[in-house]
Picture 1 (cartoon, rainbow, N blue to C red):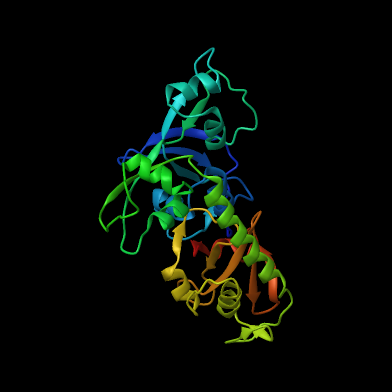
Picture 2: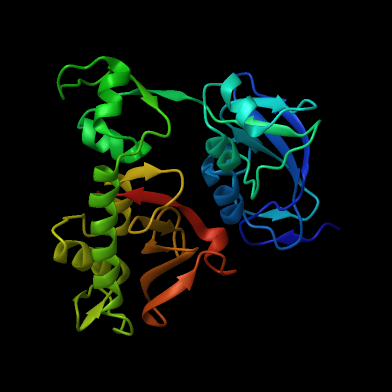
Length: 300
């Protein structure tokens, strides 16, 4: 009987095949190895856990060793020919060698004939939602406002619900990154100040917090207002496929749906108010937290 792995699955196995979905999205087929987790997989292939689950018809995070999964990949698949280099391939697809390295988790520029490489998409199409601004969209996709304006020939910041925008890839600006990183660092520094604070049901102050009370307090200290309950915090946040430092990560614990959350610190760790340990730092790969992970949201 195949042994179930009750924690989310990283697939360290090699690629067995390349498929193309009806939507035009490429997929790699990989085999689950013992110790793999969905969380690590989402980080390795830069897709969300939900995208992996949807691509494979999964309704839970429970997977087993030897299971084959389709990993959705945006972009083309290029088979390396004799004499090719990352630079010559990048010129064919109007991208850069660095972007190809990143998309394929390469640690060097060495490639070989017959190797299959994922070529990152140059852009995506986004439909403007009610309440969206160029700023919130630029934060979501990690590109500058000016890059979005240039790509779509916008002469102002005005956009409207239902409008379709082309989002260019790899166009981050130092200004956008600096403001976001600065606030993220402040959030994390504030949260760390309260390490060891006891857990108190309904608590919202340094004398004791519950999980959402802790988040609400930390964010408020940095000028960001979020809802009071985990469920509403989850509903109102902007979805992100992979959390960045300062984003919120959500888990399904004692009831169906989001019931616990923390602040992502980077390197697979998050800080939160635990009912058993108070304010503490835990690993996303922890056997308890990993299979309960629901996703991440951003508020700035």
